[in-house]
Amino acid sequence: MVADDARVGELRRRKAQAIAGGGQARVSAQHSKGKLTARERLDLLLDDGSFMEIDPLVEHRCRDFDMDRNVIPGDGVVCGHGTIGGRTVYCFAQDFTVYGGSLGEMHGLKICKVLDMALKTGSPVIGLNDSGGARIQEGVASLGSYAEIFFRNVRASGVIPQISVIMGPCAGGAVYSPAITDFVIMVDGTSHMFITGPEVIKTVTNEEVTFEDLGGSVTHATKSGVTHFTAEDDEGALDLVRDLIEMLPSNNLQRAPILPTNDSLDRSCEKLQDLVPENPKEPYDIVMAIEETVDDGAFLEVQAEFAMNIVVGFARLGGHTIGVVANQPNFLAGCLDIDASVKAARFVRFCDSFNIPLLTFVDVPGFLPGASQEWGGIIRHGAKLLYAYAEATVPKLTVITRKAYGGAYDVMSSKHIRGDYNVAWPSAQLAVMGAEGAVQIIHRRRINSSGNPEQERERLVDDYVDTFANPYRAASLGYLDDVIQPSETRKVMAKALGALLEKEEVRPARKHGNIPL
Ligand code: HXC
Image (cartoon, rainbow, N blue to C red; front, top):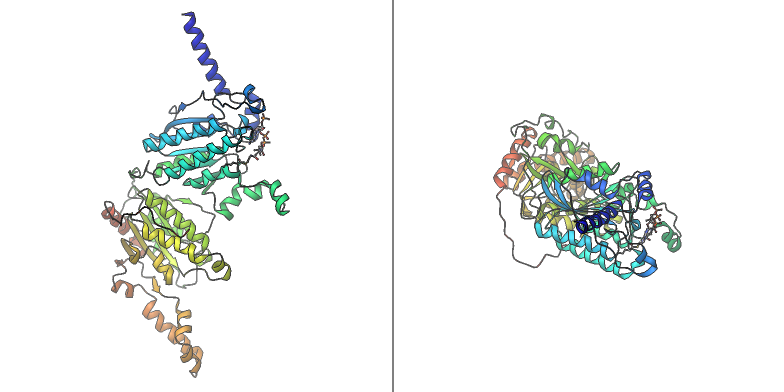
């Protein structure tokens, strides 16, 4: 009996030490920065009482730099599994109060175990990152563990959803695990991601830049496109993860959970009847079309502040999760440029990996002209979006609201690259280019030799508009399955989706394609 008490006491002491992490002073320091601790974060992330910890007693085995006298069970990362909305997820949360959340050999191997278990069980994995990076005292053993994580991230890519939340520093090569995962969420003000910090940059290039400007959430949301979502604080970031998980299937062999809705599939979208302005140069907000079409107007936009000329995000139609891609006429006239192509291509590939049907709204005047776009590689970046759509075998629904010009018409989920159900509104114009540009090219001589060039030009533009600036030529060729009233969009798309849910499309066997990276 006495021996048993002693053993239980020893277990309790060790567990208590693991839970205490780096001690009260460091916990207070964490709170004073507006950050929660690793365990508090997991509590908020997961359904109440669902967390089950794995490896709380793992310790590092570093003997250098007096590390043998500084051992904290758990080694700076809290790992395990729990549920979100009743579905299993695997997760890890780095504990900044223990060696600054730095990643040593055993810390890294704990994360590897989580990734292995998630893959084995077909469950999403969520990483809460808050770390000073490679644990300096452990040297190459730390780098080795990082690479073991990267390898597992790649192996799991397209098999289970992987989500990274950046809730503190994330520097150096450490950024590459989040970068490989499907979604990155940053917390405004307290999270930073960069390959080399301000001091190294100052030494090497003489540039002066603050932590925030270099790698804060605003930078990554607007300039680099590294982050997909930004949250005001830790709580907001964890809420976002829950919202996202509820939209996604647990793995590539499953479908996303269906969420029943009271929003009738027959609902007429009256607001869309007059959405497209008479003047083809006038912008409008395509998000209105998305929100009117989907269930309950609920749209979870991804990368909302990056490449705003294209909108991507998740919604539901008849309860089924769909991925929405839409040109945004309100920004750069909805042109496709380098950033927009890459943003949408990655989103399309995510949806295709995880059996999420695609709904595409098209209003695109073409690719953005300019030397900087050409020199930046718009040819190979634009090709990524073409490739992604052509490769995708999930149900693909397309609505052309206005312009579908040139190569961009082909790219945006056209019939020719295997759009399954393609419709247009009566305001649609499917053509090689806009009327004025086209007339200038094909009728230049005729206009110049005319007695009244301006009048002749206008007449020819009107002619071109009558012939091409409508959806009927394309509909007569079967390139469109139908022309519908804007108000019918929800009804028609929901019916089409219902009929396509069991779609199967087989492509030739191959190791993998060679997307133009
Ligand atoms: C070991 C570390 C550590 C690290 C922080 N700590 N980073 N211990 N290895 N990489 C420890 C500190 O010694 C300190 O311990 C505690 O964590 C908290 O750190 P502070 O500096 O007091 O906190 P703060 O002022 O908030 O600054 C946080 C920080 C800073 C910005 C992250 O600590 C920092 O710059 N750390 C080094 C970052 C770095 O250069 N890492 C390597 C990047 S390269 P005590 O005991 O005092 O609480 C890399 C390569 C990865 O990671 C390669 C992958 C392939």
